[in-house]
Image 1 (cartoon, rainbow over the protein chains, first blue to last red):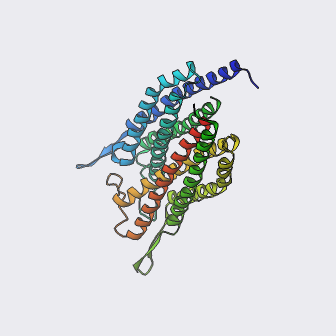
Image 2 (cartoon, each protein chain N blue to C red):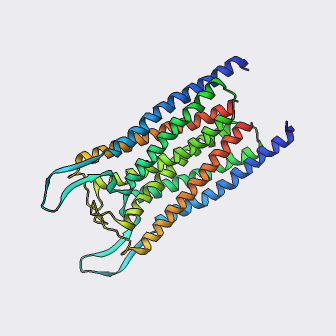
Image 3 (cartoon, chains in turn purple, red):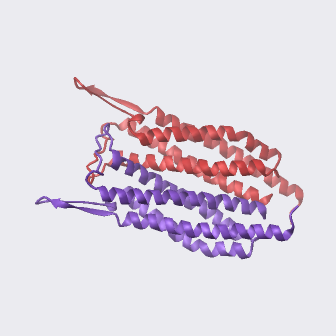
Length: 175
Length: 175
């Protein structure tokens, strides 16, 4: 049987890990939103009627991605105070439960946005011969690179969220 | 302060709810995999060289969807015994923690598959003028309906998984 002090210390450690993971998730979530939101490429040639340009707002999936990642980033910033509370009050249940529930919702939102954007990025890279959707990445290489980077950042955010949720579960158990 | 018996009863109730939700999730996950896996449409006209046919295996995203949903369905079936254990031993922590961790992974897999398939279904319905991807649902109406139904089933599975995870969190707290 561990002493009460050691148990309290371990719970405090879980709180600190939660806080640090949350800081990392803020960076990756906002990086994903910013990279996607600023992805824009204009080709250096044009015809009389038409200029070739690609931006994230040409594809509704990418617009959803930017909104979802910005929302998640905002939620993470707002959740920091609750995370701090769990460091200084390791036995407080209400803030733990609150961030546990909201983290689950945020994980789902992030994963859905990342998965949807990944599916469209895959089509942009490879196209699909059965449906006659041609790849666009030959023409818009920089755009595709930015967009792929944003998807990778969102997947990192998903992994951090999974760790946050498991950490909350352990902390609730240890109460 | 509640009596020990009432507390034990409530934990048992959480275990029964977990079991019933898991049964529902098995049905929706396998329905999603089966609906997507059997979506296949051949148009009633053909040219000399070509027959018009659409199946889920024409799009890699849909193949991923079928595999992911079948995996999740299989995991859910295998998790039933652990769920039963939590009914009869409300204070056992190991099975609870195990299904909590695996549920989080399964939620992420289901959401990623559902989100990716939804993005492609949206393109199939609406197309995209910027990238010159034409909608295919005018030609392959039945195929699109099957596929959309599978996506809806996967989203129901996602909601059930979120409930299962929150339920596990509460059960761990109540230990």
